[in-house]
Length: 250
Ligand SMILES: NC(=O)c1ccc[n+]([C@@H]2O[C@H](COP(=O)([O-])OP(=O)(O)OC[C@H]3O[C@@H](n4cnc5c(N)ncnc54)[C@H](OP(=O)(O)O)[C@@H]3O)[C@@H](O)[C@H]2O)c1
Image (cartoon, rainbow, N blue to C red; front, side):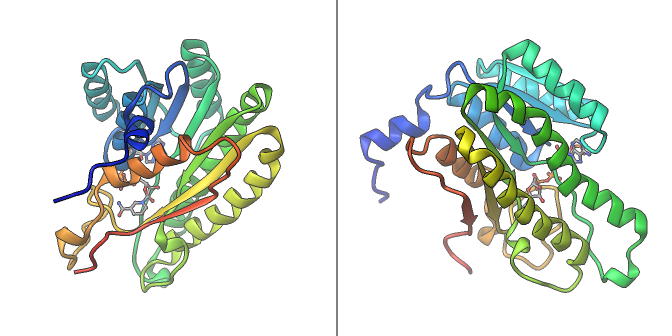
């Protein structure tokens, strides 16, 4: 039988603690981003969500609205600076300054590096690294004005280990670790936390997870829970990095 959470933790992670705050979750039409958007909305935030495919995005927006969550779906290609700029303007005029940004959108392309193309490299690096720079750069001035905020980047345990076929993806996620750490140093004096979550394999459409026992995969909600923990941390602390692994390996 599982032990119930202490009362104050249950309140911290389920009550409307984010009421009045604006969150933006990228790549929230499905998978991990969708779970994060739902979680932040259930904590009371107004949530802007984005992706390239309108149909998936509208389906997720409908799920959020069904729960009474204020949401704004925005179709955007995050690799284009002008579109990112428009997305932030739209979000701020609809809900107010973004206080929580979750850079979740990501792309995986796997295979021996000598068999991959230049366009594979460009697509993965633009989505997993450049888009994080563009989106964070667009929200940072508002967070600095407020004197608070969270930027949470979804990296991967692939940012810390090498495996065959992982060259382009690992390069993007290792780069993301450096980008996150330096952004954190630029913004912490302004009261803004920039942190990174590194999940292991998560059961989404991202990859086939061939050969893996499905019981050992994380669920999108596990990553969403880590986001909820980061945005409810104590006022003096700065949790900069969270690794998320399944409890049981086999
Ligand atoms: N699943 C895993 O095993 C795993 C493990 C560790 C880390 N991660 C990381 O977790 C994050 C989410 O992964 P996931 O498994 O949820 O992936 P997913 O199911 O493939 O979802 C990716 C999301 O990103 C959006 N997206 C991709 N490119 C975009 C672009 N250029 N502009 C706007 N939106 C874009 C997709 O929508 P559209 O295609 O419609 O744009 C979708 O909403 C990624 O950063 C991934 O690297 C995943």
